[in-house]
Structure formats: C-alpha cells, structure tokens
Length: 633
Image 1 (cartoon, rainbow, N blue to C red):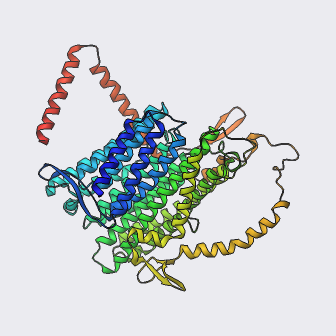
Image 2 (image 1 turned 180 degrees about the horizontal axis):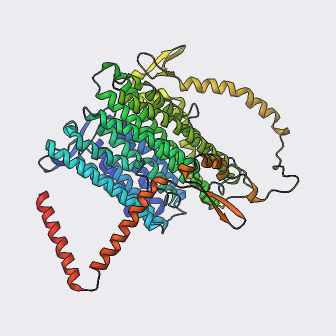
Image 3 (image 1 turned 135 degrees about the vertical axis):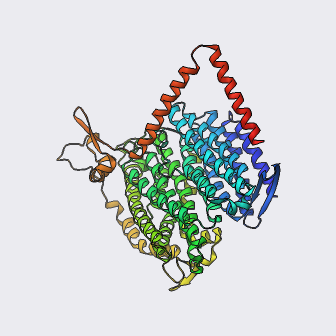
C-alpha cells in the first residue's frame, strides 16, 4: 500500500512538472500528490521497513523505506505542501511562468525522495533534485541571475559535503545504508552534518540570502525557508544521534546553533524588506533547532541513565521547533506575499495597513505567525522556545567543565536571540498588519484559495499550540506528559526527571480565554463611542515622510550596536537614512569576486579564438572524466 502511494505520488509530481503550461492542472496534481504523501506519513507510525530496493554495486544501492521519524517529517512537509499548492492556484496568476510550476512539482518530488531514502546515494539524488528545482523556481522572476546562481553554489557545496561524508562511510564500513550509520566514523559525521547545516542556512552559510529572498516569488521563498530547511533538520535527526561518542562535535553544533540564532535575530531587527526579516528569522529558528539536536546527541550518547529523560525532551524540543517553524514561516510568507503583491511593494514601510488596505485574513496571518515566533502563549512557538530554554537550563547535568561552559554561553545567546526576534516581529506586525494604510487600497487579484489556505494554517498553529499534548503524542513521546498541580494527565509537559519545569499550554489557553472575556465585553459595549483621530502635529497635516518608520523603530539598537551592524548614515540631499551591514557576508562577497576574476582569466585563456586551445581543453576533460569513471567503477 505504501509503495503504491509513493509511486503514484511520484507520477503525479512528474505529470505536474510536464504540464506546467496548464497553471491550475499542475498545482492540482501537486495537491493530490501531497495528499498521498500525507497518507504515507501517517502509515509510517505503524509500518517500518524498506518497500523498494535496487542494488547497483556491493554496499551501494538505491532503497526507499519509511519509519516513524520519516513519517513525522512526511506529515509536517505534506501539510505545507498542500497549503502551498492550493495557495498557488490564485498566486500563480501573478507569476504564470512554467519554470515556477515545474520547479514546484520537481522540488516536492526531490523532498519526498529525501524523506523516504534509506541510503546515502538515494538521499543525495533527492538532495540534488530539490536544489536544482529550487534554483529553477528562483529564475521565475526573470532576473537576479547572479544571486540565484549563488544559491545554487551553496546548494552544490552542500551536496559535495554529503558526497564526501558518505564516501568516508563507504570506506570505513563498506556500505552507505542508513542501518550502518553507527559505523560511519567521525569524518562521515562532520561532513554529512555540514551538508545538512548548509541547507538550514546556518551562519555563516547564509551568504546567498540577502540578495535574492526579497525578489523571488513568494511561493519559492516559502519553499526555501520552510520545507527545504526542514530537509536539513531531518538529515541531522537521522544521522547525528546514531553516531556514538560524538560529544565534541555535538558541542560544536550547540555553539554554532546558538551563534546562528543570535545573529539571525540581530539581523532580523535591522531588516527593512518585507521578506528579508522572516528570512533572517529562519536563521534564528534553525539555530535553536540545531542547538536542541546537539543537546539531544550529547544526552543520548552519555552513559549516565539520568540523562535519558533529557535526551527525549531535547529531541522533542527540536521537533516542536521544527513543526512551529514550518507552519508559521509558511503562513508568514503566504500572508506577506498576499499583502506585498496586493500593494506591489517590497519594504515594510510600504506594506503598512494590511488589515484595512488588503484584508483581515492576510493581516491576521501575519499577526498569528509573528506572535508564534515571538513565543506568545499559547501558540506552538511559545512551547517550542520554552522547551529549548528548559533544555539549556539543564545542561548542568552534563559532566565536564567544557560542556557546562559552552552550554552556558549558548544559553545566553539563545535567550538574547528570542528577545531580538520578538523585537523584530513586533515591528513586522506594527508596520504591516496593523499599521496606518493612509487610504490605500489593494489592487484587485484572485484570492479565494489564498484566504482559505491562510486561514487553515492560522487555525492549525493555534490548535497545535493549545493541543500540545496531541503534538507530543504525534511525535512519539508520551513519557513527557504528566498530570500535576491540578492539571490532569496528559495536559502537563514536564521538562526534567526529577521534576525541573512544567507547563500546560492547554490550561494557559483556558485561563487566557477566561481573563479576556471581561475586556472583550467592555470593548464590545463601548466600541460605538470610540473615535479615531489623526496624529496631532500642531494642526498641520502630517506628510507621508513624517510618519515614524520601521527603520526609525530599530535605529536605537542599530546605533547602540553600531560596531556590530557597521551602521552608517547616508545623505541624499535634504534626506538622511541609516544603512547597516551583515559583516558575515564580507567573506562570501570577497570569495565571489575572486571566483569571478579566476573565471574571467580562465575564459581568456581557453576562449582565445584558437581551435587548438578548444581541442586541448576538450581532450583534457575527456581524460579526466575517463580516469574518474575507472576509479569509481
């Protein structure tokens, strides 16, 4: 049954790619295939095993299978695939490019291949398909080719790391099947995890983002930020915990994740483009996920039985954060895309007044998604961030001064990251969803399916937050749920054994609802007497340029941290503006310029108009390809 669902989904995705000229048909096919993937994921909770295998060489084969971990990720991915496919029925009218529709279907096929792979070769095939498909989607904008190729370069670096890692595993164990991961060794673990980390946009591998995220179609941005980075999370969840005695590398992951979370939050505060801010929040959220996975790996690899509960809690934290990010980031890009296209704007200041100017549905989507990232209870993002902090707080249980020191540093950086991203999300809500619209109205556009999918994800984020016990059971961790302090089982989530911390999002929601009843009733009774007036300016009407801007909102922090932001003032006649810089992009820019110069030099040598140079070049490439082929065979 699972095998039939898989191959039918593959056929539907391929048909969707081939029929990319038929806009509605291609996304309906993607929707149908995603439904099948959702059913496969559910089946993975009860079935575990390989359902297809083709042997190429001894120890090297193509194999597909499913277990509970892949089932969980299939469900998470399929939910947002379904939402994006339906959303695209309306949104694709704005970008009716064949490359966008074809890349969408092929990208989802590549991710399906990754989540069902049972060996390194099969996973790498899906990895490359996903990367190339995402690149094709980026080209649908018809411009920004250099930035798109930069993304492709990072994608190929990721693939190369995976290739070297699985090659090391084959050398040490004679196999690249996932069942032999524990024999992979340190070299395998380092290279493979780096390959997955690059795809998660972890600092410093985020260098491609700033030049392209604000320009590509919103569906492509949503795919890149949520499902694609989810594949990196899945790879780490699959590989890292299976390698024994990896405490040193796990500490590296913890620190790298915490630094990434802090840097993502810091840059999100200063971002002024509608989609660059959520892009940097992806770095922040994936950094916290990486930190949680590192703690999970250390606790799981420890011989101390007292750390068993912490290992379960840390992995559950990484999965809750992954689910929260996947749902909320998809909703945020969909709602912002709805507003951005309705206004035809790119900056946060230009996109103000979505509630009254565009509609309540996209405005509410921005609010709910941003509040989830801001850890607002009882949304699921609140629980995820509480869980990562509780995990870090319990690092005192780990033996060794080095572990305690780096865990403490990571805790400080993670806490600051949560505060910074809340600051950034409040800016996003205040200036886009709830800002002054100044009488602007959106341009007419098809939005029925856009509203339906946005509303569905809004409800799902709220339901997952309130119904957190069901989410924990879905992930397979019933031992984390208790009844305590008047809260019946299984509505209390406990972070430690012995008891360390406890929370019940369900009861928090009930209490918040009760406490909100009176204010809501008072507001409803008096809303007719409420008057709205323009900002007072001494009787003089405010000019458009005199309103408090999003850049002004974050200017104080940019000034205080001017050495980090490299803050500078730009003068344009009578006007002044503040510019900041992500200094971690400097090495990437320098490397790009070096590659360009080397490429230009090589082109002058090879393409010099002499037929002998061309023949020599082709002959050298043929000999190299022949030698590599002989070595591989």
